[in-house]
Image (tube, rainbow over all chains, first blue to last red; front, side, top):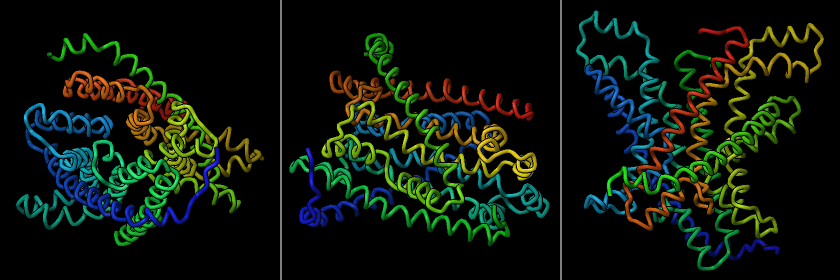
Length: 225
Length: 223
């Protein structure tokens, strides 16, 4: 059983695949935007003065981090209607990606905040800055560069996890490849093209993030870290 | 149906599915460790060909999605006359993918061994392979185990994908029971809880124990 690669067929489905790639970008972008905000909330939720709140949020983060995204997707998609909330595939996908990666990003933020030297906080206290001013003007500008590599990695991570959304019917790249395969019974080209498209996008992005990381380290005076 | 009677009725099904998940996890983690050791060392080779083979492998597997690799292995390879059973395809995809991530961990671990150890081995006239085996590798465990624990949890989560290539694992059974009974909250909720218990109360404590053991072995106990 030998199957040949057909180039004319490849070019025939290429436009369709590229359109679907835009949906993948949309999913990754919106998911990331939600995750970035959820991450901040979850991170702040672990720094409240109330110990019980901190512990509860910490456990929620641990739970979401150690269970598979795929199961969570199905959970959100199928359970919400049981409570009378009808969510479209897109909405439940965005909620799930946002929550799942929000927990990861909250860890990144936490690490970045802890990466700022203690003396900076103490100096702010000594100078009697308000806590809002301390965060805005002193801590965040120093924490942000530390968070950049982690944030970038999870952007690529979300992008690579978007094919999972096909399982609940979000019409992105992988879904389209499956659909093409299903009605023509040629899986070789669509699946291979999905792989190539992912490679073409994620490799330069990862490379760019590494460059950025190096630039950040350099700007902070850390060489060869 | 409340949650407890659900657990009582479908518990056995979930248990046998969890065993499949555990199997897939164990096989693929063994494969991943092997691959990451090989490619981690290749990555550090001075030979430019060996080094670039490892780099290409690692970048390729880290640049594409696990699910695409798995589907390719399971659905496309048979077209070339290489039909693989679902379990083998799943384990291969998981092991190769996480092996690429692990190779970077291994590489960082090897590089983190203090320079004096390399020089000491050289001074004592150890051969290259002896030096790796006897001096360097035993010292990397305390360094690589914490990041390896993270990867192991990711791998356990990744095993849920094998349900998509027809393996009857935890996710598959959850989907099946959801189809049959429409008790979505119970079936997916129970699956989530089982995954959580496996990760948090079995896998992580085990790796933590290994970490302590490794630290003790190189004389860094009680950090």
